[in-house]
Image (cartoon, rainbow, N blue to C red; front, side, top):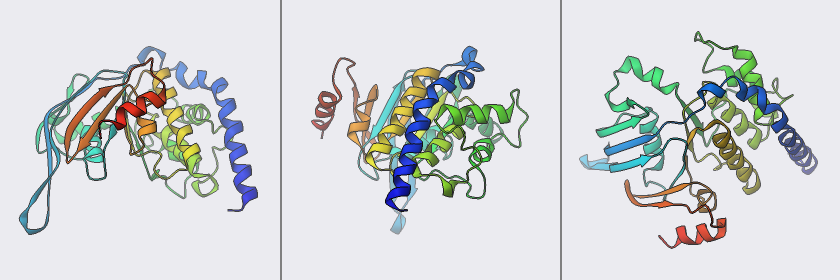
Length: 279
């Protein structure tokens, strides 16, 4: 991409983001009565993987968490600490080997296979690699989770409104290759919201983005959480981003080593310093 095209893309994103708030009303109007997050609780949660020579590696090692509804929680720690696995367990992408997961009133670990799909529709997933279908437009990518389903809302209208809410009005018919990385992640966020989820699980959502665009994506996730009351769990290596959440959970070798509540009266720099002292 040339410098000129990068500049044009940045200007387009900025213009669309600035105009997005005036378009958000319609996207949230239909969900005013149901806006709420769900508390997330894990007890003695265990997930192991088989390694070489018959060894068993604990990816999540007896994790206990009690996260309030509507909270914004950052999961931090080095690679291999269990952040992604923990999100996958909560989202029922992977099955726990022991312990319990309760989201709202649902004990996820007790659900039979037939009910897991229905549970997953109450969770929005945002991944580092976007996972957009390259041949589909932005609008069709947002629609993919609901295409085979009977729903009680206008699918096309909700998808268009969600794209407008994330700052992509007018880009509905663009395929992913015509969008910047930040714009593709915005499409992925809109897709995650199509079911009006109670919980959003974001696994390194800024990992493939430059610093400025990554901050914009986190701004968007936190704004959506504030507007919709959604519970947000965000896995990240970036402590600066983690410091903007309500709670920071530090993981190491699959275990929770610290849970820190972020004081609302502290600056981001003060919070970051406090988190870094934990090591």
